[in-house]
Length: 173
Image 1: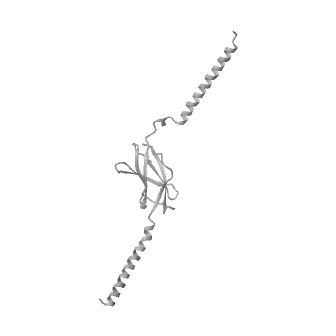
Image 2 (image 1 turned 135 degrees about the vertical axis):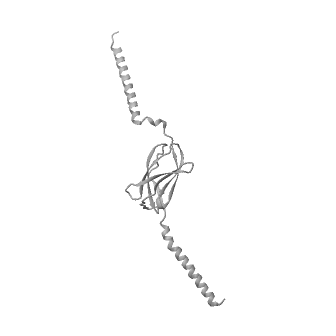
Image 3 (image 1 turned 180 degrees about the horizontal axis):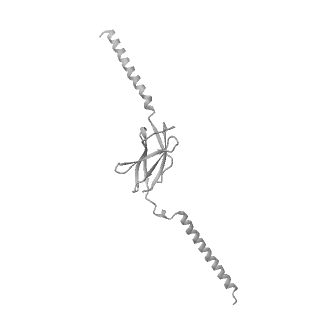
């Protein structure tokens, strides 16, 4: 191999390497914008068999609210791995969404995630769906009325006892 052909081979390899590096660098900025995070506004009650509005925010790069047109919502995965998707709608505030979730009839731990359109899914971990509270049928307002009735009854007994005691004291012997 001559010095001329070696020099030409080195230049060709250098040009090919620079071209590959340049092309790889062009694609990097486009892929850099493809991530987002989601956060719940509040932890849901997650009571078995109930329906609840769950609101959340999606932030591109963790900073800018992301306005997505479709495929946004909450996916709840049961023990067999079957997902149930609850679509979300925008609330009017950019990046803010609400999904109406119907919790499973069976209490237990379920995996769930927020689907963020072309950004993909944001894993939320697991949610503990609670069994309905058996004692919750008596509302607090009903309990207040029962307590008020009991207090009035006791007050009535005290007044009657006081009147009887006074009558005994005033009666001639």
